[in-house]
Length: 312
Picture: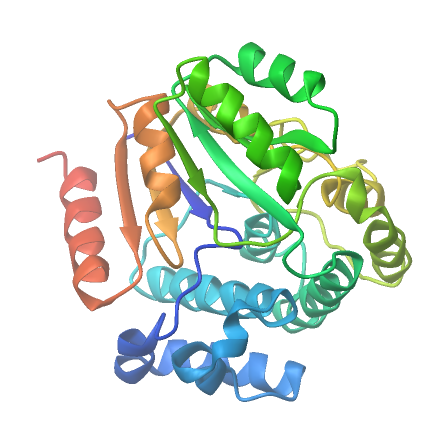
């Protein structure tokens, strides 16, 4: 059997009620939510299950991290463990917790601050992120460069899908031009901020100072970096990487290709939604791709992974 990768979603995957069923059914999940609640001085279960603040970046980021790690611990409890980990954008912090590089409680506090600083950088409502589907990367990049306004390519998700971010006006202008050039779809993301652009430089600087006080351990398993799609190395400067991560594009397609090159044939998306599963399917539809976010998907993953281990 090939290797298993755990992959973790980023901001935009959140929804009210995420993780509720597994929380009610698992002491392991409740324990993770309790650690997060103590770290945040907030009731994390209430935040995830019934609070509209889950869509505010300061709360979205620790909520997604908490749900993702709760699901990850539940998989481990069922003897399903990863050989490698990666996460999209915010999900990279979940991957680092999964690999024991970051302590979970410390990571919850860290991403809350990260989210708060990101939120403070961006006046509400003036920014957009849109996924452009069906055009080569070079066409999207060239079009963004030709727009007289702030719009950048930020997420290289999978073949034929690239996210652009910037001011509302510039993104709308770029989107119209890209539709004229043959884009099949333009899907606005559930975020009102130009994540992974230099508009977040102030947040990057504040995060950098906080990261200098953060304790990092050596990774127990390889973790793939968003900023270049390659594994963290032992001597890598994590402060520099994670602070630059906030303003740098996300190379998700390259990250997945790197994991495939490392021998991964099974990807398990751990956390809310199935967005990453869709991207991976477009990158290599031959790979086994699962997700876990509720009791039914948990039972399916446990059954299928064990079948594969037994060579059935």
